Image 1 (cartoon, rainbow, N blue to C red):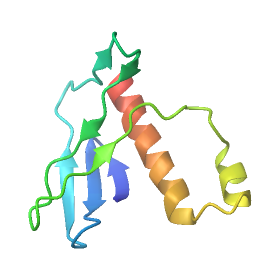
Image 2 (image 1 turned 60 degrees about the horizontal axis):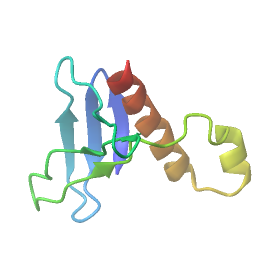
Image 3 (image 1 turned 60 degrees about the vertical axis):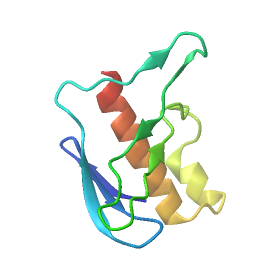
Image 4 (image 1 turned 90 degrees about the vertical axis):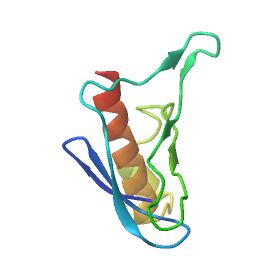
Amino acid sequence: MILKFNNGVIFLRCINCDTDYKHHLRAGQKANYNEQFGEYENLDTDPCPSCGTIETLNMNIEEDEFDYEDLEAMGMPNYEVNQRKYVRDVMKQLKS
Protein backbone atom coordinates (compact mmCIF):
# COMPACT_ATOMS: atom_id res chain seq x y z
CA MET A 1 0.00 0.00 0.00
CA ILE A 2 1.36 3.43 -0.90
CA LEU A 3 1.71 5.72 2.10
CA LYS A 4 2.91 8.70 0.06
CA PHE A 5 4.86 9.73 -3.03
CA ASN A 6 7.42 12.52 -2.89
CA ASN A 7 10.35 13.53 -5.12
CA GLY A 8 10.57 10.20 -6.94
CA VAL A 9 10.27 8.08 -3.81
CA ILE A 10 7.28 5.81 -3.21
CA PHE A 11 6.77 5.17 0.51
CA LEU A 12 5.08 1.80 0.98
CA ARG A 13 3.61 -0.42 3.68
CA CYS A 14 3.73 -4.10 2.82
CA ILE A 15 0.24 -5.57 2.56
CA ASN A 16 1.59 -8.92 3.72
CA CYS A 17 3.68 -8.08 6.84
CA ASP A 18 3.08 -4.33 7.50
CA THR A 19 6.76 -3.40 7.03
CA ASP A 20 7.34 0.18 5.86
CA TYR A 21 9.88 0.58 3.05
CA LYS A 22 10.74 2.80 0.06
CA HIS A 23 10.95 2.35 -3.70
CA HIS A 24 13.11 4.91 -5.50
CA LEU A 25 12.27 5.70 -9.12
CA ARG A 26 15.42 5.83 -11.22
CA ALA A 27 16.52 9.22 -12.53
CA GLY A 28 15.01 9.63 -15.99
CA GLN A 29 12.85 6.51 -15.61
CA LYS A 30 9.87 6.48 -17.99
CA ALA A 31 6.76 4.34 -18.21
CA ASN A 32 7.06 1.60 -20.83
CA TYR A 33 4.33 1.74 -23.48
CA ASN A 34 3.41 -1.57 -25.10
CA GLU A 35 2.36 -0.86 -28.71
CA GLN A 36 0.91 -4.35 -29.17
CA PHE A 37 -1.55 -3.98 -26.30
CA GLY A 38 -1.98 -0.21 -26.51
CA GLU A 39 -1.26 0.40 -22.84
CA TYR A 40 1.50 1.09 -20.35
CA GLU A 41 3.24 -1.75 -18.54
CA ASN A 42 2.56 -2.01 -14.81
CA LEU A 43 5.24 -0.80 -12.40
CA ASP A 44 6.56 -3.40 -9.96
CA THR A 45 8.13 -1.98 -6.82
CA ASP A 46 11.20 -3.31 -5.09
CA PRO A 47 10.40 -6.34 -2.91
CA CYS A 48 9.55 -5.82 0.75
CA PRO A 49 12.82 -6.24 2.67
CA SER A 50 11.09 -8.42 5.28
CA CYS A 51 8.98 -10.86 3.27
CA GLY A 52 9.71 -10.25 -0.43
CA THR A 53 6.18 -9.16 -1.42
CA ILE A 54 6.11 -6.95 -4.53
CA GLU A 55 3.54 -4.18 -5.03
CA THR A 56 2.33 -3.78 -8.63
CA LEU A 57 0.99 -0.39 -9.73
CA ASN A 58 -1.48 -0.23 -12.62
CA MET A 59 -0.14 2.50 -14.89
CA ASN A 60 -3.33 2.60 -16.98
CA ILE A 61 -5.80 4.16 -14.55
CA GLU A 62 -7.81 6.77 -16.43
CA GLU A 63 -6.61 10.21 -15.37
CA ASP A 64 -10.12 11.67 -15.43
CA GLU A 65 -11.93 8.50 -14.35
CA PHE A 66 -13.58 10.13 -11.34
CA ASP A 67 -13.29 13.31 -9.38
CA TYR A 68 -11.87 12.56 -5.93
CA GLU A 69 -14.86 14.17 -4.24
CA ASP A 70 -17.15 11.89 -6.28
CA LEU A 71 -15.20 8.83 -5.11
CA GLU A 72 -15.55 9.91 -1.50
CA ALA A 73 -19.26 10.63 -1.99
CA MET A 74 -19.69 7.13 -3.46
CA GLY A 75 -18.36 5.72 -0.19
CA MET A 76 -14.88 4.75 -1.32
CA PRO A 77 -12.65 4.50 1.77
CA ASN A 78 -10.26 7.42 2.24
CA TYR A 79 -7.17 5.18 2.01
CA GLU A 80 -8.33 3.91 -1.42
CA VAL A 81 -8.92 7.45 -2.68
CA ASN A 82 -5.39 8.32 -1.52
CA GLN A 83 -3.97 5.25 -3.30
CA ARG A 84 -5.45 6.47 -6.58
CA LYS A 85 -4.02 9.95 -6.03
CA TYR A 86 -0.53 8.56 -5.39
CA VAL A 87 -0.63 6.20 -8.38
CA ARG A 88 -1.71 9.08 -10.62
CA ASP A 89 1.17 11.18 -9.27
CA VAL A 90 3.61 8.36 -10.09
CA MET A 91 2.04 8.03 -13.56
CA LYS A 92 2.45 11.75 -14.22
CA GLN A 93 6.13 11.63 -13.32
CA LEU A 94 6.86 8.53 -15.41
CA LYS A 95 4.90 9.73 -18.45
CA SER A 96 6.34 13.26 -18.55
